[in-house]
Image (cartoon, rainbow, N blue to C red):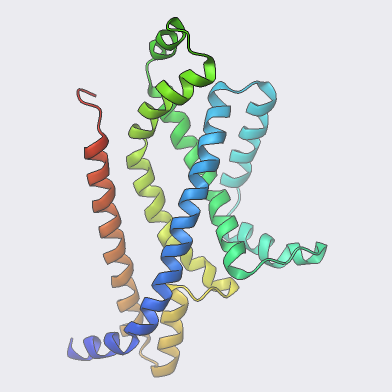
Length: 219
């Protein structure tokens, strides 16, 4: 145990540098993914035939292919047609697109769980369709989707380890670098796992408190 603590603190500065990239990737991706997810989710419930077909195709395409393959296409394949992305940008785009597809399904389910009478009530007081969605339906739906967001953010934090494969110096990459210097792979990666666990426990606690604060009384 004493040896593990010694090795962990030797690697700690590198792990913290990697953690910065991990959190940046996860936070940026969850925000962009939320924007994509809201748009796609609304189209899948309230859109016309064309927008519904396109949004459904997007969701099925992204959910039906591995995230790692999507990342490799963006980073390794696009340069063949003259589009060059940095490792960080390619990772953010792939994680955002992937998260957006899953968040779209969370939001679609949350929207459909809102009583249909809410929309009729909004129409009865003179609101347009999009005003009803924005001011009546979405505030209720977004509260209901918080538990799913918790899972999505936890997944994203762990998925960021894939960015190591295209050269982003995130937490796992820095752990590998530290371990290659002292050959303490067991101790270093045990420390990496503990850092992930600690961060995820904090995220879970924060989202749990957010869910309690915005909960609709009686629902």
